[in-house]
Length: 303
Image 1 (tube, rainbow, N blue to C red):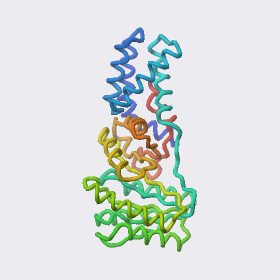
Image 2 (image 1 turned 45 degrees about the vertical axis):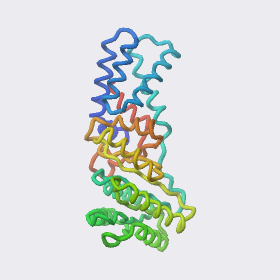
Image 3 (image 1 turned 90 degrees about the vertical axis):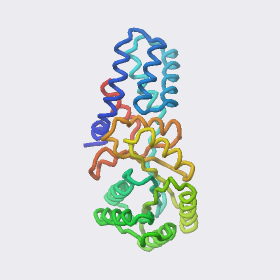
């Protein structure tokens, strides 16, 4: 099953939430008026798109309706789809332009961070890349063990140390291993202690300094992993992490199990961070590169 098939299947709950609400409103109006906009806005907010982004969608919709001169509420559907694709911007894949390139993976515990690293490492390996993992979440022995299981499953090298080791030293050792092996990509796990923002900020700053010193010209991606099922809380997490790290992309996991996929639009619109991958199932291939157009098609297919 290709991306569209997987995203369509994974977005079923989100599609049902948004499509049912929008369809119900459009079908109950014979003309476009302010009450229609108010109800649309309320439906979008309830679909976890958030107040700020829902208001902006409706403002853009008003403007497009004025420009196009449409009068039939049924024609709103395609305009909404175009607006959302425009809000999501161009698709942005991983920038892995150097050898080695570095991917730092951040996020709170329980969002699927380790699983994301495992799936991504296997996909990169299958595409011909030589991958080295760094177990730099040294505050939980379980995190090191879990990453080890994925490294073995993916058939890639993992560098680790004992619980409590300075994470930056693990990153240093991982870079040294990658250099000696001629690796293409380094992927490092990190601790997700957002409740202790000062320590997390200091820890990430030290990791970035090690990378800048050891690989001054390397492409560096910082991917924030979020659980789609947490809805607006995921947007708040992204906002908090943006204050402590230079996030280059979002990985949104567990999209298939929730009706809250609308947060993708809110994250991009309110924080300016592109979604680079979405998790739409348990399988290795269910971590999919994000496509704005196909996301919008998946949401609005039944409208």
